[in-house]
Image 1 (cartoon, helix red, strand yellow):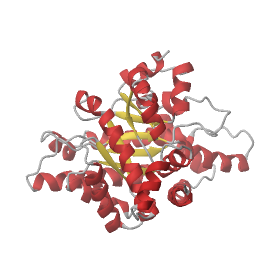
Image 2: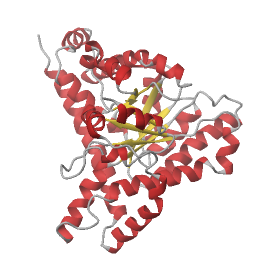
Image 3: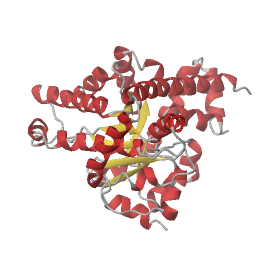
Image 4: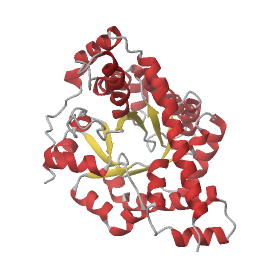
Length: 363
């Protein structure tokens, strides 16, 4: 039943689950996915934690106890989420060790309200890192312009980072540069680099969701419909290959540094007209991560057709797609700027809902 998932994994893509909850930890469902579905990591975000905590009774006792201690809703959320992430890190420790620290990773995001505040992002990233206190933790930092210096600084301080909310190749190139600068600073200071691992979360489905609407307004059943998101990710991988084989990086690799891997996020298909596995099977190549909700994981398991590396053969065609999108009048820069701002707003809203749900818990 998991032949397709095995094929994805064997092709060099690490399968991570885009979900975490106390229910999942205590029921054994996460262990089941690790044992039988090739899941080797977990990503979280404010929306995931909002759904987890508001949809379960398992948090109530802790919330009430922490309230009785006088903790604020924000501090209670931090306690609950870091506890779940710490337990997940412990669960993935064997995977972490078996993969030479590359996988077995669990991510936790800084408060999304800090997305445009470099200093506070660094401060909270360091705090969450020390609070969870596990070697296989990743601190999620948004790829806003204000997030870029935070990525560099946290990396320079030896903290492994998951960079989130990346929508364009130019921003992804800036993210890789920030990561490498952090590694170079460690090298210059005589500090170790071999234990730092990073991923760059490149969002996929939201690209099609936005551009398809614009194409629909131009022409019904437009021939470019559904092509932008995968082409965008393919060009991001091309950018990754250029950096990973550059003299600048090769010098660091010889010192034991680990290249930041591209991670395909937002891989659940939103348009039911599309194959439900497309953002997995069309984005297969070595040294990638694909984090997916369990529904997408199950779709791949049930009918995914894995054809090996589907990214590098698509690079030339992806450049053509972007040329055609420009000719069609699609302003891609405008699209990705909107999606970044909208992504921050959605995570902020989820965080505020989470705080409100915690406040509402009573005896």
